[in-house]
Amino acid sequence: MHEGFRVTSNIFVANSDEEILSCFPAFSALRSHLQEQEFLCQVRRQQIQSYQIVALEYEGSVQSAAGFRLAEFLAWGKVLYIDDLTTLPEATSRGFAGTLMDWLIAHAKANGCQGLHLDTGYARHAAHRLYLRKGLQFNCHHLALELGKA
Image (cartoon, rainbow, N blue to C red; front, side, top):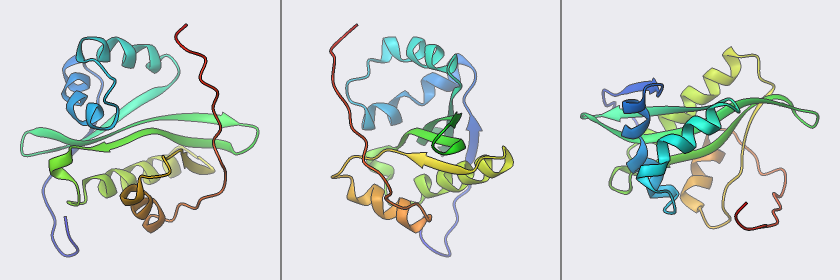
């Protein structure tokens, strides 16, 4: 979606099994390790921790989706944390992720959040350009220690 060009799309929070499963192709584009037969159970477990999915449907299928949660931290206060933001490879550069970012920012404001946070991979330059255009700033490093499967 370029400046001055608007597509008609439907943004929805995925609640039903069918809605959640309709988001799998978009999520698997970002998280290639995901298995379709385990996706719904994984999302349902994460929902216990306030995880939600918002999706953008265009021309009958989900083109872009985001996994997020409202959480409270000593460091940041109440924030909307984006776990995942993804778009189908064939649908990139059409403004779908930007439209979801706008929805997420508005949702954070409507829920009294002090901020919106996400982690991003170092080499995801196209994503970085979007985040910077939306006003996000690089302000910390995320460190991790892989412990293997539990």
